Length: 238
Ligand SMILES: O=C(O)CCC(=O)C(=O)O
Image (cartoon, rainbow, N blue to C red; front, side):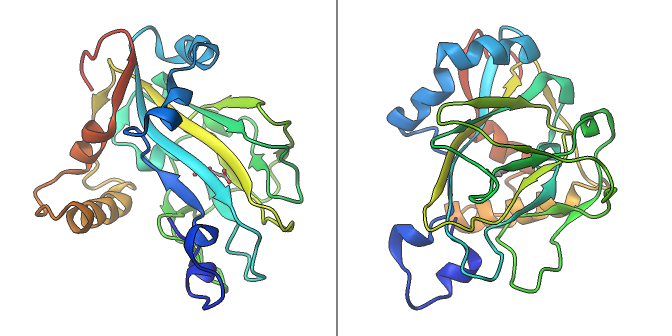
């Protein structure tokens, strides 16, 4: 994924415009992260013994161009997932260097995971917004926030309903983190038609059809079943 304001600039090209690598499940070196015993030890507390790595990301938050496009709007990851139950899904997010408010650490609304899945859409930000960066339409702006300042190698595990995002990178360096969303392989797919997730489902299907040259019979659920990889136990359902 390329940052919207950088990729349109004539001055920066190549890897400096890359804000995120997604779906690295076929890259043995990066995917090693997803199978680390010291990560799975905690993941298993949420998923149980049958563990699928569903979504992999290496986030390379670039120095902001001044248009504030390096921000990630507040969102719930469950918006992107057509599988349940939510309590059997967990994200691990590991800082690859020191992260702090200046380079755009994670910001979370503690306790928000006790709520329900909210309506998401593209925020109307003046400087533009990166592809797929949907945000919660309405959340309480007075809800207490916690900025997760972390040392290199620190890892946070969080629930897919937790409202979170990240700030602008106001430094000259690229803020790197590696992350994986895990789900129990005993989870099941749901039909999101007619729900708040229909907008992201249509967007993902459109992108998959374009990227892989397949027709629009590919379902939102298929896009996840194809990416998911077993990292522990047995692939029972997903
Ligand atoms: O690393 C970040 O800046 C936020 C990543 C995130 O929340 C996401 O990609 O869902």
